[in-house]
Image (cartoon, rainbow, N blue to C red):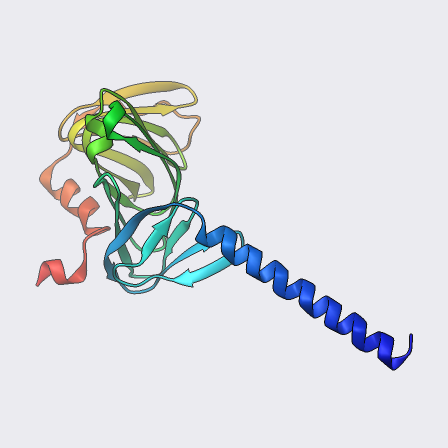
Length: 218
C-alpha cells in the first residue's frame, strides 16, 4: 500500500471510529432518565456498557446505569416516583425495571443490589393498585409492600430488616415474611431464611450505620 493509500485508510478508520463513538454516546443519551442523585459522600460512579462517569449532586440517573460507591462513600438516589435508595460503602446497584404510569394505576420496579448495604424507602409505585416491586440481593429476592427496609452483610451474615411495611424474603429453598421491626438472616441463597424476629435497637443502629452519612451524626 502506497503512502496515499495509507492516508486514505487512516482517514477512513478515524471516521468510522468517530461515528461509533457518536452513536454510542447517542444511545446512552437516549436512555430514559429515571432519577437523580440527592445526596453524596465520597466517590460514586455510574457505568453503562463499559462507559463510566463520576456522579455529583443532582446528577441524572439513567435506566440501566450501574451505580457504584467507593470506600467510606454513600450515595442516595431518588427515582421519578419518589422511591429513595441509599447505598453504603463499596456497594453497587442496577435499576433493571422501572414502569410508572399513575394514570393507569400500574407500576413496576425491579432493583438488583449486587453488593454492599442499602436502605430502600418505597415511593408512589408501591401505592399503585396494580404494582410489583422487588429487590434482588446476592442471597435472596425481596418482595415488598409499603416498605422501608435495610439489607446487607453484618457479622458475617446477610440480614434483612423491615423498618416498616411488609417484606417477603425468598431464597431458593423457602420464604419468610417480615413485618415492622422484624429481621431475618441468611448465609447463602441455598439456606432457608431464619424465622423472623424483632431486631434489638443496638442491632438496628449498627445496620443503619452502614448507610448513614457522616454529617447526619454532627
